[in-house]
Image (cartoon, rainbow, N blue to C red; front, top):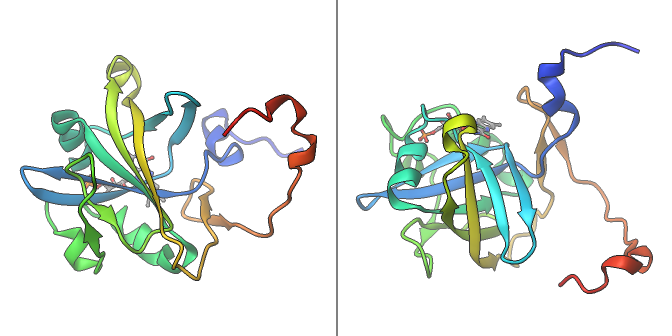
Amino acid sequence: MKELPASQAYRVLEPGPIVMVSTSDNGKPNVMTMGFHTMIQHDPPLIGCVIGPWDHSYQALRKTGECVIAVPGLDLAETVVDVGNCSGDRVDKLQRYGLMTQPARDVSAPLLRDCLANIECRVVDTRLLDPYNLFILEATRIWINENRKERRMMHHRGDGTFTVDGGTLDLKDRMVRWRHLP
Ligand SMILES: Cc1cc2nc3c(=O)[nH]c(=O)nc-3n(C[C@H](O)[C@H](O)[C@H](O)COP(=O)(O)O)c2cc1C
């Protein structure tokens, strides 16, 4: 077998769909791309997100404690990569990339209208920020956009290449131990 450096474990264990994170700092909305996220707990629903302190979004999230995690479909692929290659410090990314927004219910960060799903989140634990830049977020509301035709999500392989969702495999009948999950 070919050996990969241990530092590239993330390329093997993809963390989930590539997402965009919106924040709002002093009324100025911004958006970044994020691949390093993971579900932590079902109830209350906790999500772990690694956001580097070099990102403008880090400062906004630390200050406001609020964000939206938006899941884009394949039709937004190029935008997702471009959004992750520039900073809200310098450009208004929502305007530059024509991302339409609408107000969220619980948080100041905006929902991204063209995404498949938007999750409103509040920061509930910052203890792992110093060692790992890991925000623990609680999802407070989820909005699904059922009008998007393109429903395939993208999974980042760590180097600017992506695996795209294929078919759905329904093995619910075998999930005997986990039927209680919503
Ligand atoms: C595919 C992709 C995945 C990324 N994943 C992350 C991530 O998980 N965490 C992070 O801090 N930055 C990640 N980035 C980088 C940020 O999106 C990038 O630094 C962004 O420009 C920050 O924007 P901001 O300064 O406006 O917050 C990723 C970029 C790309 C293109």
